[in-house]
Length: 149
Image (cartoon, rainbow, N blue to C red; front, side, top):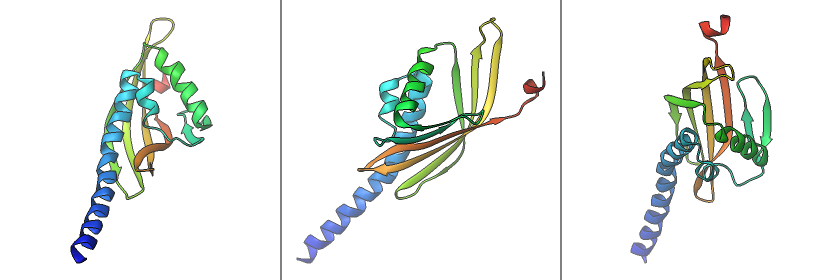
């Protein structure tokens, strides 16, 4: 009987570790989906629930999964931008994990001029039914000398 109990404990520990290690894979998939404008891949990394918080660099707030998907559908349709991510800090927990990145967003304005901005991007993921899913996305603009012109 003891080997059976030990086996169950071992399997439970492995499944917990699988969720924790899966966080990095989901995080990478999430960022890749943004960079490649892959809406289906993006959707696979976000919460299945109705509540999803997205805070824009200008302070605008949306709080539903549907609104976040609508925004990303429109944003991904625009092929004039690119975004890069530089990791700052990642904190992995058993059921909640966060990642902080410095981002650089580049685009071409309607008049043809290049434009770029930098922000800090804070992402919070929660473990939902054994899968890591985005629940909070906050962007904070970093003031640069470009902002003064």
